[in-house]
Amino acid sequence: MAILVTGGAGYIGSHVVDSLINDGYEVIVFDNLQAGHRQAVHAQAAFVLGNLLNKADVAALFAAYPQIDGIMHFASRILVGESMQIPFVYFHDNVMALLNLLEIATQHHVKRFILSSTANLFDKPNVIPIREDEPLIPGSVYGETKFFAERILHWMDTIYGLKYCFLRYFNACGAHENGHIGEDHDPETHLIPLTLQVALGKREHISIFGTDYDTPDGTCIRDYVHVLDLARAHILALEALQDGQSRVYNLGSGTGYSVLEVIEAARAVTGHPIPAVVGARRAGDLPVLVADSTRIKRELGWQPRYDSLRVMVETAWRWHKAHPDGFAD
Ligand code: UDP
Image 1: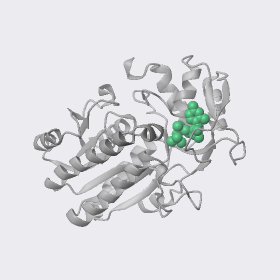
Image 2 (image 1 turned 135 degrees about the horizontal axis):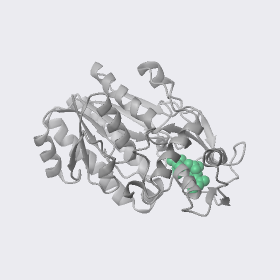
Image 3 (image 1 turned 180 degrees about the vertical axis):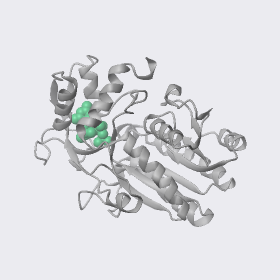
């Protein structure tokens, strides 16, 4: 079985590629290396440099690898804040890339598609932890592009029988336990890598975006889920689609941690005092985002293995310490 992984040189994609190869899959990575890193791609994966916005690139990809019969689509712009500053770019890039990919994939009769979706679809949850059947209210232009993506795939299923699985990630974090791949974003905006950059001496302090939320310590609570647990979920989802049923899952480890708890865990793991400075709230942040992942556990037997905050931070720290400049090292 040959799996196309778009964005396979990125953070989550590269970990999934690693797991796919270890499970014996043939993997073709397609990436424009705008945000991804060539060195992050497993040596046994085929690598194609190309742009989903260029339909000819996508057609050439499928001509070269006609055996592709499943797709995991990670390639996307991913920053909530940025999407509110350059909305046209986000709508254009995320939606056009998907349409080009689907147009060629359906011509080649691909039948299975895993979409990287997001917790940013749940801007006004009625019940926390958040289940799949909460109303879909995107919290940003980024979230809206994923909402469009889910709707487009709904029609691809109806019209072409393309079975999909939407995986709505909460806060992906951590790194491969071997320390050879990990998170390397430019610019970095996520809490755990930024906190660890303080321990590395690359930043003076971590800013805490608000301490006046309605939570026990006043800081935002998030559901951090390890990237290798996400990788396992992708492979289970791909295999499950063999039964011809499309599906959707919320993916978190089910426990919420506050910003202060994350910083404290980083202090414990690194032994560094990690100075923190209280700043203003960040626009668009919800006080609490925690997933109810009961459905994927029940239906696919998924079980997060790296679900302690300490292990998440430890694996991230191993990566950042060994690669302070990311893949440039
Ligand atoms: N956060 C923070 N300081 C930072 C970066 C993030 O206090 O420098 C907070 C942010 O407001 C949110 C949590 O940490 O409550 C997780 O943010 P991140 O950007 O990692 O992920 P998000 O929840 O936005 O997907």
